[in-house]
Image 1 (spheres, rainbow, N blue to C red):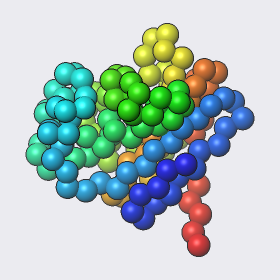
Image 2 (cartoon, one colour):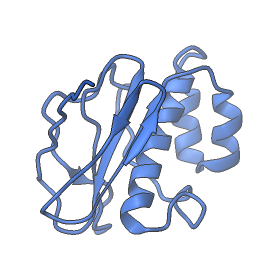
Image 3 (tube, rainbow, N blue to C red):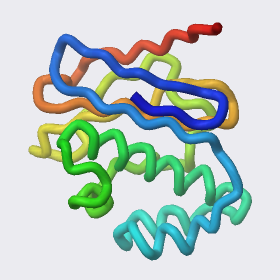
Length: 144
């Protein structure tokens, strides 16, 4: 489970362990945070974005690391910040994928992730453990 301003996310699976993280996009000192906590490749990827896009790029990486850390039980503090995450080839998608599937994060890692579509102004990552590869991710909005 994860929550942020205006959105709560819960991940449930019968196919294996799952983790989820959601963040509201907001102004952040993206490069400072990235340089302190992320690897060189992730920092370079965030630097490639315009200053206005960098908070979204930072939060893309952050939600993936947080969701994967929940699956492995390491969180962010016990190695989760150092775990590389899959980076989109052409910037941060505006809303995530409409029909995402959990895909392997790195060869042999036994971890999967997907970034499903969520309301504007938010980023969401669902991650899975061993045996979750190829599982579809479904997002349902529940109001009230």
